[in-house]
Amino acid sequence: MNHLKSVACTIGVALAMLLGNVQAQQFPIPTTAAEVPGPAPGTAMTKAYVQSVGRMAYLWGWPLVNNANRHAAFSKAPEPGLLGGVLPIAHNSLSMLTNYVSPEQRFVTCTNQDVVYGFGFLDDLDDEPIVFQVPDFGDRFWVYALYDARTDELSNIGKQYGTKPGFYMVVGPNWKGETPKGITAVLRSSTTVVAAAPRVFMDDTSEDHAAVQPLLSQIDFYPLSQFDGKMKTKDWSKLPHFLAPPSKGKGETVWVNPETFFDELPAVMKQVPPLPGEEALYKWIGSVLEAADKDPAIKKTLTETAVAAERELISPFFQWRYNGRPAGNGWNSPVNNAKWGTDYANRTGTAKSNMYDNLPEETKYIYTDYDSQGQQLVGQNLYSITFAKGQVPPVKGFWSVTLYNELHFFNPNPLKRYSLGTKNKNLKFNADGSLTLYAGVKSPGADKESNWLPAPSGTFSLYIRAYWADKAILDGTWTPPKVEPVK
Image (cartoon, rainbow, N blue to C red):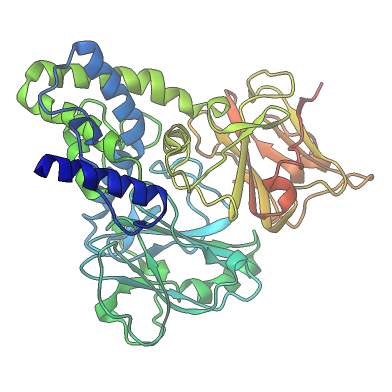
């Protein structure tokens, strides 16, 4: 009888559901092992499986470990200062330059000489937020880029956003304090560690160099406990200098060591929570890391995989043709810069070639290693880059063309010239209104020298920056010019 009642009840519920009478009633769906993210505990792992997971983990985690190691190095700074006397370094505060970044620095590739940079790492943002000051920049272009531990930008603070002068605050994902009076807005990071990199445009003139100094002195980041509602000022020209870590080779400081990568990744993964949908990825990678802790053979395979992946996966990203997607006439451009999400390939490509991009709405980056014939740019040749009349990069901020050597650093030259663009007031336009820039070891001639970017004798690359780009650049209807060999 009870069985019959149960059957009748089940049939009744089913009929009621069909008739729409029990829409509020919910029946839990049993959770099976297959629905738990990642592999089942104790799953057997072949060497090939470990290599596959390790290779993906290396591609995915490379920017996170890169950022974490920079943060660890910067955290050792006792106060805001200059690393090696050339690069701003600070911990839970900010350090600002007062001029263009030095061409001698080797800590960050693809810096520019259009803006005055600041930089600092902020951490423990769940415990205490950081307040930052925005002075009144007037008509001058500026942007504060704040990055989470994945190198995604979280800020939207700058000229193009109509940001008002005042005090702002950045907090961690779990901060639950009260916002004090006088704070204009609060930025919440998805990670407790944030990298801050203000950029302020400066003309290449002594007059503008002097004019920008009072503004730079009002840019500052400091813990909430120091906030008193009054604009603080600092003389950034008197920063102390700190010794730089020993350099390995001529390229950028090595921030990711494949031989120790899988020793460092577990701690980084604990500090950086998964994005929505990444839960299974974390479990997948984590299961292999846990197995490696217990099995030296698996650990050895992971280390060997990391070394191979550095060579085969990561190193090619330094070539611009593997970075982003074609932008026309042999140039490439990133798509999701600084808002990578799960675009792991492009996130890692940028972390390898030019760490800490701005958002596309702030800066569009366009770069090439090749001329119009598809040949590698070589300094022994002379090249012309001609923008047709009215076709210099359309921007509301500024634009520039920078020349980098094969290591993505500035090429030392007697003119001390590394880029040309909006900041230069002596560019010569052609009779038809077009603008031709030149790149090569030899000068194109005295009458064209104001438009010349001196190149190294070996290989080099060209890099267009369009700050606050117009729609034509963002949607690809504006095409960068050909890089033509001059015969």
